[in-house]
Length: 273
Image 1 (spheres, rainbow, N blue to C red):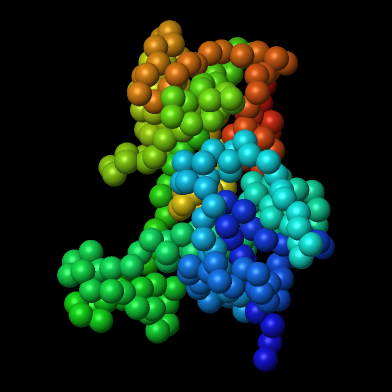
Image 2 (cartoon, rainbow, N blue to C red; image 1 turned 30 degrees about the vertical axis):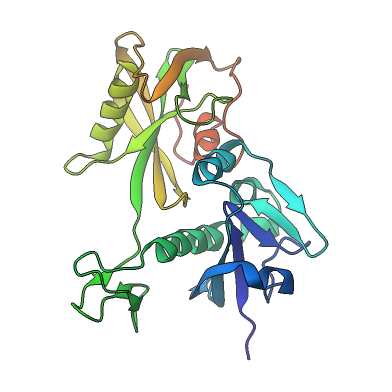
């Protein structure tokens, strides 16, 4: 039988061998902790995404994906934050960026989509698609992707960063928010910046995009220029927002995050100062 690559996740961490590859089988010590699994093809190879029992609450998972420790080793391998895999220069980790992000996103969807929203019948695997179907009413449920924008606003040589009210109080991050029905991505950028800080922007320009499977986001990154307005934060969303010079940035999301890529010019389409 052909080996099956095992993409083993625990909260926001993935388990890798000491060579930074996915194992060919689940270590025996993890087998009793499996709460869900999904077979698929990743990077052209048979693969199984495996979810272990969570060891921390959901709010901590999101925070640690941005600012948590990068890895924890044991005798069989290493637990790495997916964010650390995204940031790594190691060729083995780079090869895992797309398949691991896909595996975690699909696994999150599979684990949270159990019953038909029309009739309440338990769902089963679709015979030919990566989807779930209802045997009772024939409804089909495909994986969910939630598009969101993230933006770095420029004012001369300064950039606008904020501390969020409900998470990651130790870092200053770019402004971000989910796309709403009926609006373009550029309209979403302008709306989110104004709602959260009271600032009007112009010249929103696409910078890049990145999968962010916490649990199912796809982040679309922009640069924009300040147009008018003084900072007035929405306290329900933002605890503080400030302009910072490029050469004196505060603590901000770590390498591998969408915000890091945007702030440090990693995306291919970048703002030219």
